[in-house]
Image (cartoon, rainbow, N blue to C red; front, side, top):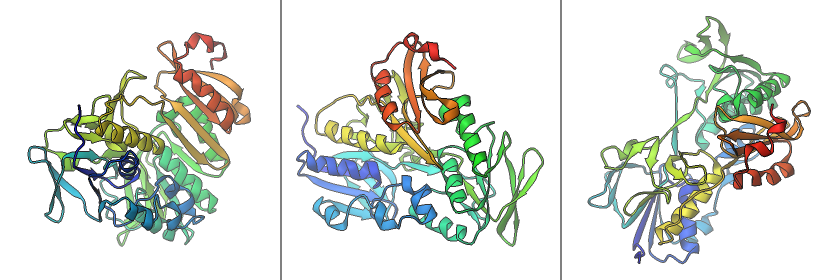
Length: 399
């Protein structure tokens, strides 16, 4: 029988960390709870940062995950504006940046990811990353001056930032070394439609080349030189080239650290230690593969699973991932996984109409479905992924 820990410490106070704490209390946990977050703000939702917050449609209070009263009702010690710098597993304690240590019986790691930058960019005024609320507010203030914008990176974040900037009627150029935006996420065919969507909305696309260096005057960005030898003018640059798991503070701890905190199928990294959210790498039994996901819903569901397992459930976490992106008039939703060598088949609508559902097949099974402006239909086709439907059953619509 698993004993209930007396003292649970959660490092990371975004969606995964807060959800773990809330779920523990909802399950009747009455022990001590400590929630550590490196930002001074109370926990908030990140997806609106590149959309509603960036364009000024929402104010920061709207994205708070809990009110101050609700946080107080958690009966947890809230250490916001403080970050973990080390972990001593033998002594069961977390080291903080101010020199304090926090003891624990059970530990949940939910530190998320750190945005990647470019070597010569971080010191230049006008060059922005887009991860935190403060990042977004600083960028928003610059965008209101009507600058020429270069978006470096055409994944989820870069594509959403470009869309937001165009909604503000700004001059936008998007640069990515891949030939089409969001290729890694959706494959060439759907990524090609995303690229056309941006061109139709006035974005200058510079795909198939990379940034060689930033051009600057008096410490401020003025443009970019690309690997193909061309240059472009820019007053503001948004760097959205991906992120890496925030695991530096765990170096030397003894935990397995590769692409995140390595966990088993129950999200357990070591006795009494679990991981949840963007930082967690675990074996998903449904797809029989290790995965690490940077999606809002996964952070919530994984945190709930971790809370249950921490209290003794010991159940594998095997979800069908779900994520979405909103760009211009396109609402794109996806369930499952999307391997680079997957086959595609249209199961609803027509690609040309930009209202369709496509299925992705891999190793003889349906592993993913994607809907473009088809919210109801894509939910019904999700069952193909849940049931591991044979690809042969729908391959007639292959494209």
